[in-house]
Image (cartoon, rainbow, N blue to C red; front, side, top):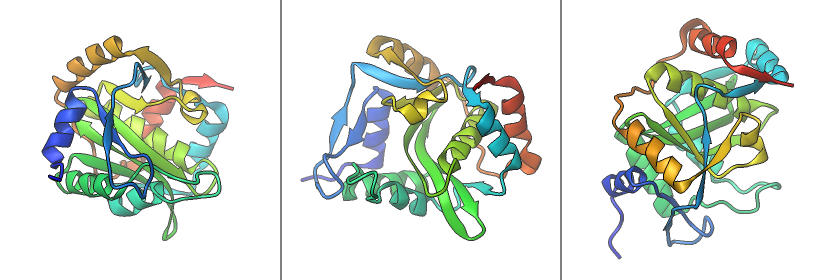
Length: 218
C-alpha cells in the first residue's frame, strides 16, 4: 500500500475532510466528511469567569512548537477516561512530517519541566484545524485553547475547525454548522494570508487582548 504524503493530507483538509482511524493500533486510516461540523467563532469565543481567573493567575508556562512530538504522543495516550484514541502510526507520521514543514503546530502548557497539557492542529491559509488536546491537571487544556485562540486572532485566521462538538468545546461557544456552511467558511479562510505566531506571547499581550474582548459565561 502506498503511504499517504503530507501534501495529500493538506489537500484533504482543503476540500473539507480529515483523517481518523478506528483505534490507535489499527494500521488503516480513513477520511471523515461529517454532515455537521463543529467550529468555534474566533470573534465570539466564550470564556467563563472561572477560566478567566485561572488564565490570569496561572503559574503555568505556555509555549508553542517546542515539544510537538510530546504533545502528539500525549494526545494519543490511553487513559482511564479514554480507553482508546484515533491517532495510529500512519496519522502520527503524517502530523510529525507536517510539523517539520511548519504546517502543524502545538500549544503546550508546562509546570516547571513537566508537560501538563496542550493541543495541536494543522494550519492552512487562514484556517486552523484543531485535532486533539490533553490535560493532566485542572484547566491545562482550557488554558491552551485560550492561548491558541489569541494567536489565531492575532495572526489573521478566520476559521477554527474543531470537527466534532464535545461538552469541553461547547464551553467555548463551539457550535455545529451544516457541511455547506462549513465549506463556505473554509473557502474564504483558505484565501486569507495568516501566520501562526510561534514566538512567545511576550507579557501575555495577545491573551490579555482576547480576555478583554471575548464574552463571558458563568
